[in-house]
Length: 368
Image 1 (spheres, rainbow, N blue to C red):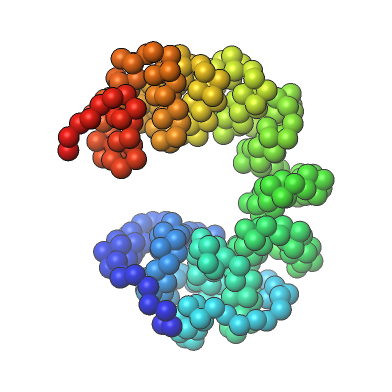
Image 2 (image 1 turned 60 degrees about the vertical axis):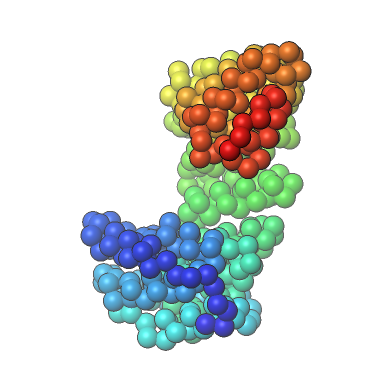
């Protein structure tokens, strides 16, 4: 390859291959989504280990099950042809130069190009790579291919360019998935384009029923740009649609309460999570602990922190540090010391580096 990356991890590849060959999920049904080994591909892409990705794809080329040909051929996405990145053109050309026994579906292409979306250096080149591979081997992009393309455009903070892709899919009678709609929604809201996002929402509601993830995207926007009443209204819409708000939904509601100083309401929602069939996640502990400590509520903060320890989902260092400093400021030296010592004993693997600075805050100087 043109660029030399980190040393290959043969054990990881062998483990992935073993799982794929022995698991019943490696049947043709698994390949319908084009992401049978997506977790492995994703990890390798984040590490920029494209040699490993190539080896993994090569091992699967002859193992793919047959699939009936599509009813009609579709052309590649209408994108301008451009040069491929040097680190991908060589391996992609090599493993696609002898295509596996496949109809026009692009399983392996989807896997390769999807991996690029998980690389900060490569996601902008996904449209070029997808177009080039589709053109070179007459592959017909499917709903997954288009979803990957939409994701790359949204990662580039240019969700408006994804709208023509939706029109192209409609013209070619290719299903637009909830994931594609939600990806565009999320990007438009984050780009500060709520009007465009609402238009996409209406299209989504007509084409497929929005799910909890889609509603959470709207809750995220309104928790930051609206009031708690807006989030509560969306939660009622979810229930009317037969959907149950999840932990992420309640996290946004709590964040909105805290933004407007309604900390008691936020704590009430937090304490009622179990009754709603939800369990707090790391974001719950991190965000609520930070908000309570910022409000000088060390009792509430200590409650949230202790719960996070029980669930083994610690908040980040800055939030814990804020709690310890708040306890020291309130002359709760013994309580602050117990927090630090408890952390060092229960999470010794974590309590290194910057975490050990907590010892200095409470006056502990433990020799290594």
